[in-house]
Each structure stands twice: as structure tokens, then as C-alpha cells.
Image (cartoon, rainbow, N blue to C red; front, side, top):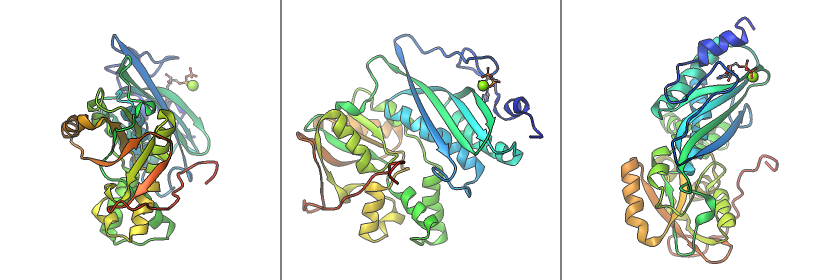
Length: 319
Ligand code: ADP
Ligand code: MG
């Protein structure tokens, strides 16, 4: 490496901290959660070829590496405080580092969150971020709180990232500007942090959609010990995806993955508060079904007819 490890950290990743008690440069960073707050901690690793394609622009990769972690904090209703970055790089490529850091810090600044430490090593490109946030004691949104009778909601639209992936794989084709829009959904997801915060005390359970809507819903159902009915055609999708054949729309919306929208439940009488929270957060939420007693997941179409299809969700050791 022409650029040494410490020069690299100093040049690309060291910025003064304002919220943390101590940032980069010592053996540990020091964070100071507020009184009565719990620390919410989540790690996500991005591996080249597994989570991103080598064609991704570095700026978008920097954005996405942090976005997927902030999405986990959002799903818990946590307010982001700081994050660490563990980075393995094949070489100290300054064009890559400059773009990566730009995308990373633009999103960090948008959320008032700062980089407080990390680790840097030579090796196959691998990015691991650990994000830390705070949430009032007992106030975190969990997967385990869904109750029979609750409504099921999802934020934004889902499925575009999967459609983009299919275009990259060559199984689908899209006009240039349509492709750019779904590619943006795949490469620049927007973590729903404001919505997670606004849903505290309103949602009974929540998860972020990273491995496919039905698979992630399955985590809520198992942790909560409940069943659900999903109205498959009510699941919100973009105009670009909505113009595709119905079977493809269903695959992308229900089993797509990489959406980073919030999937959550709330009691029926809380519907007005749910929509108030969505307005406050500036993101649409759509009711897509309900929670019932039992343990199965049923899919119905707009006329209430049963939809039979097995949509797998993503599993690293099965895929
Ligand atoms: P140590 O050997 O004590 O673990 P290092 O020499 O690995 O410390 O790192 C020096 C400092 O730089 C530490 O404060 C560490 O948190 C920080 N650091 C290392 N790599 C990164 C990175 N990629 N991003 C942010 N901070 C980093
Ligand atoms: Mg170290």
C-alpha cells in the first residue's frame, strides 16, 4: 500500500466528533447514551459478490453500507448515535476510498450520526459497520409484540431492488430511465429512521425488510406466536414494477429483499396514530393485512381468494 494504514484512516475516516465523548484515535470510542436510555446495537457485513456487485459506484456502496445498519436501528425505534467501520480492502485505492467515504458521510450527516472507530486491514473487499443508537428503557420496537387483531403495515414501496437485480442477472429488461430508478432503490436505500422513532409507543412489533417481505414477516410471526393474512395485491409497489407481469410483481414485492422498508403491526384502533406517525416522518405507509391467532401465513388476492405460491426468502446458506 502506498498509502499507509494510519494515513488512510486519518485522511478518509477521521472527523471531529460532537456527540460521542471520544472518537477515533484511542483504543476505544466512548459514547454517552442519555439517562434512562438503552443502547441499541446492530452489525451488518457487506461482502463483494454476495451483497453488492463489483459494478457499484463507491459512493453508493458507502451509502448502502451505513443505510442497512441504520435500517436495523429504525426497525427498533432507536435514535442513531454513532457507528464503527471495519474495512478489509484489497489495496489502498484512493478513488474508491474517496467515493466510499463521501457516500458514507453524506448519509451519516443526514442522520446526525458519527463514525467513532473501526478497524482497517488488507484483504478481499469486506465492509462491516456496527451502528449504535439509543431508545428509552423498555421502548424498543421488537419482533415479538404482534397480537391477534393487529393490522399489518409496510412503509414506502417494495420490490424495486429485486427487479433491478433481475435486470443485472439478465432475466428481465427495462428501459434506461426505468432501470435507473429501480437501480437507485437497490443501491441507495433510505433507512426509515424517522418512521421508526415516530412509531414508538404505537407499533406493537416491527422489522425491516431485508430478506423479502414474507420471510421477514415470518420472523415477526414466530417471535410473536401469531398467524397473518396478507393481501398480496395491496402490497405497495412503484409504477415501474406495477407495469410488469403480475407473477413478477408478486415475486419482487413478496420475496424480493434489499428493500429496507419497515414492516410493522399496530392495534386496529391505532390506525389514525399510525398514519399521523407516517405524515410526521414524511413516508407513506400501507395496510397490507392483519394478524390472527394461530401460526400460519395466508395470502389472499383483491377478491379474498387464496393465493397459493411458495415464495422463498433469502438465506445465505441455502441460496
Ligand atoms: P487498535 O490496534 O488499538 O485496535 P488501530 O490501530 O486498529 O487500533 O486503530 C487506530 C484507531 O483508528 C482506533 O481508534 C480505531 O477505532 C480507528 N480506526 C481504524 N480503522 C478505522 C476505520 N476504518 N474507520 C474508522 N476508524 C478506524
Ligand atoms: Mg485495530
